[in-house]
Image (cartoon, rainbow, N blue to C red; front, side, top):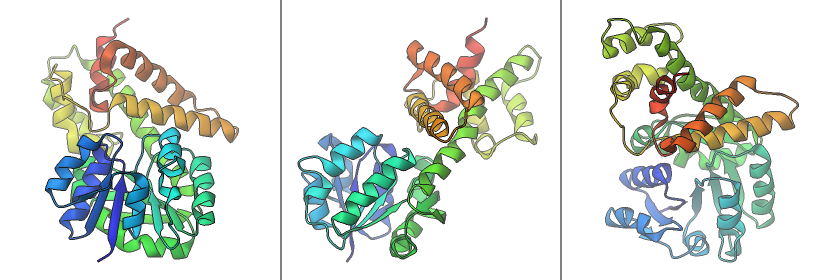
Length: 295
């Protein structure tokens, strides 16, 4: 049996590990906070005491980490993944970071004799548990084909979009319209909040318009509840996570000679919301924050 390791058990990493277990794969997990491993241990995963121990046990290693600093620690730290003998291993890196981070990592993985594919994914916990993510693979064709059997367990669609770095570019691009949309929806709602129309009906109307994204069509009722004052609890994709992504998008665009004024405007509101205590809330609550911040 091919053993698959998952390092990084945030909401998405844990969901990916659970999905792999449910498909019958042998799974080894590691997380800096060891308590996050216990639910997966109960489902049949083996828990590794360190990234190096995980790499030693697995043929394929998936990482989905917070940022470039976490990648540095998990891969290159004293007991990191690359401190083990990893020749012939395949690494599939799924974090949302700048392309240059993945390119530098790919060089180090190759120097250790292993194969590397970046494949950041679109989707949240629900699609991850059902194997319905969208994957954006970057890397050599042979490595991507080697990763295919694993990625097909996780993704309803994945595309090989270019060399290492291309996947990161694509992931940042697909997240940008969503981040901006939450701000735009809040501003749109402010224009008609005063009308004598039920909140849920109003969102249903928005769902039918040409400007509605898939997320509103799928989660419109939840957005309407949030606009009515219901807290959604810990975010599936929280505001602080989106802030990190927006900052990454703006930095990457700047390195390529572009400005992103719309993204920068959205980031300013996300920053303000985080400072007001909304950082851990789901991004779907951002329209509510926009309405609350009346001038």
